[in-house]
Length: 601
Image (cartoon, rainbow, N blue to C red; front, side):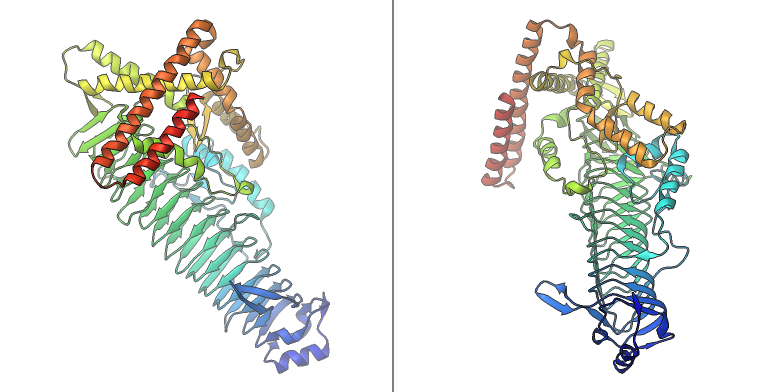
């Protein structure tokens, strides 16, 4: 860089520019003053060269330069187009190739946090700060912080990571586009990101990778938050004290406060507060409220409402919708509650069900009692469609997958609950041969539904074991695992592995948060082998004869055929209602047929 020449200063002044001190302005060796007009310079300002055109929009280019802008303690990279129409930029480093148009104020201060280090209360709205936001936050790190007693140790590692990266002042990366924004304050904006028409972006980090820039759209207000690569906030949405994770979407006036959205979650219209929204949490509707909950692979029906005011003592309560659980339109759940994986909740559920060990259930509430149909959701077209759509809807770029997602639906975590649920149902029937209803976990199970539930869970277990025997030599596995598994923010792992990780964190065995993420990555890499070991030990496969193993494979084929047949019948029942076209039904049945053929092979 060099100082301005007398001739360049004369040219700039002739073009309506002025400066408190022209000697405080430094420029690139190839700087051309003709592309700087109507500007006011304060403090130390450095300007790059303006030798190329900049893409303003599709098919619309303008030559790089600076026009109608006030710049205070700013550095401008090469070939930027900045036209603020009277607005100002203060204490910012602007990267090469940026386009900043019609923006009123873009400012940073010495005490900026950029949304990092901000602590929020999840899932209990009133329990005090639990999760620390930072740009590398994953669903696994957040899940550990909210569920175990190592939050302080993790917070210290995170604080160390933030301190090591904290810049002297705010910056934008290469090729950033900013247009028609009222205020940007204390915000870092990574390469290629775009902010178009936002009202206010304050104390934020807007992240990107080469393949996945983030986007903030019209009339958005976002404060004290982080948007990870591929994330988008659009259409007058309001985001406060939250993390919008990889490839997540918030739009159509939605409100997200003190919440965590991870990996492909999608929120439109409704409200999210004090919630952990794990991978694929989806809510589309205006009247939907997700509050005080832990969700994963979740879909909220219209007018779904969760209540964390169980009584009169404030928003103390929270609950869990296990992987794949969903709600029907108009559902209302009163926390605390724990709903099993892949279950469907309908009606007004106020009995605080504790039914994690009854996956694939229908849960009906009428405000007075809750009826549980165990296992019924196993063979529905909706569940089949869900478990097949999630893998193909992972829109995260390959270079930006931070949170770990295990896509298995019949996993050790779920099958263990199926086995436990089946035993509980068998014990009910055995212990009382005359009762027509049984009480379980805050719910009522009718005798006929208990009998059917045993059949559903037996089918799920046979599908799982048979599939394991079809896809690998499980009986030769030398791996063993705890009988207990957990779903840690989308990563399935043995509880023993998690305990080992937690003990390491508590004992300060990890020097950085990257070391913790590395340990989680190793656990994810071992998933298939650990699953083999768990399957062998849980179902004693290593001691089975070859004849018995062959019989299990045959049972799997029978179970899978029955499963596909049941799903087909469920789809045909929906078609019979008259709202589904024949083409839609045929398309679904063809996919179902393809799944059947794949498993047959």
